[in-house]
Length: 399
Ligand code: NAP
Ligand code: MG
Image (tube, rainbow, N blue to C red; front, side, top):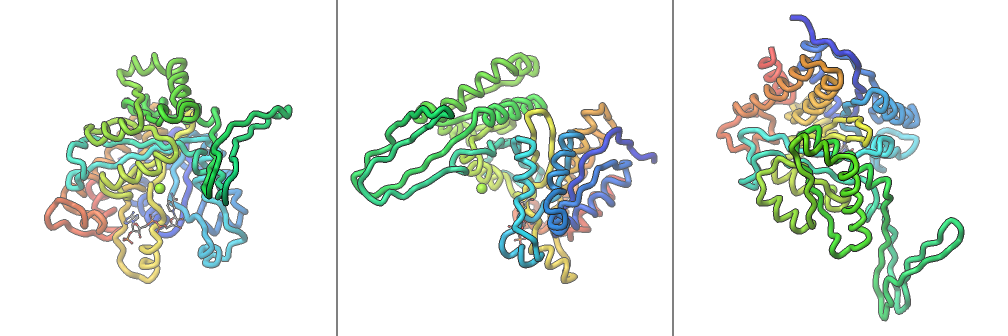
């Protein structure tokens, strides 16, 4: 059998711990036997980030801009314990944060549905993809405790020195205040990423805020989405037969619970933080979740939604058998390969990616799975496989 050729490479970002071990096995067992894999390789493993003073992360982000598609392994975001463990020069920033800032992107997360792992919400038949705005609001706030009676104001001083102020509250006793912001350009990028992704998936886009209460802040989100939609996307949505739908956040939550799924739900930063955990746990597990960062100019970076699975890695190092779920990492690879295949009109590569996804899910649906899924499956007497045996079972089906 001749291998499927790639016309242009994708950016490959290797990572840390257990997911790094899975990374190598996925390439050897599931991809290289079928595809003449072309990647531009960056080692984002913590040691190499430290050696390069994190330049490797910046180089990888720039490469994604050049090649349009990247696939990333989970990486350690260092904390104090990691600085000691790896004897780091400094507590490097989260690579995901660096890449997200460079691409100005929005993260889309969707559950991977499979027979035997049933959503808690019975009427959810198709995945709900959550798009979370990743800039500003309460995540970049300024807060103050108010010790006693007095006046709190918001003051804007323009570049030319002109001042505008409004009263926040006239305190008669102790209290608290919070200031937050967003940028129109960031909201515009968020809107464009969401509309483009909806067109790519051929799914409706929902967006919700609390604009009835927040008449300037949330209203600006609503109006910005509507303006970008009318000016740039309305025609394309009509042609694709999909809809953009705006409603209040509380109405959206009620509708989501009663829906059948199969749409994209765009959320402001805080709503996205909260709702993505609700949606993902209601659908099953973080290891059954795809995650893709989409930039407004159409660069795609695929990854797993979970971390490096540190506990399993230490067991692995001790020579114990692990049962780590590789589905999200496999789907990161298939997402990236299908995307570059679509860009290059390479239908063989797109078909390969879809087949690998199907075969992966078939193995699970037939009752062979890793421990995390065995604990929640509705299939009786599932066979619990090791990390490697699960990949071998998929490889056997692929052959
Ligand atoms: P984690 O790696 O997501 O793992 C937390 C726990 O969830 C695991 O101990 C395991 O539970 C379960 N789990 C997660 N993924 C699994 C999988 N594929 N298969 C089976 N079980 C899975 O989170 P963490 O341990 O809090 O973080 C470890 C490192 O990952 C940290 O250094 C953090 O900085 C990094 N991280 C990276 C990313 C990223 O690169 N995108 C995201 C989050 C965290 P049991 O132990 O009960 O089996
Ligand atoms: Mg959260």
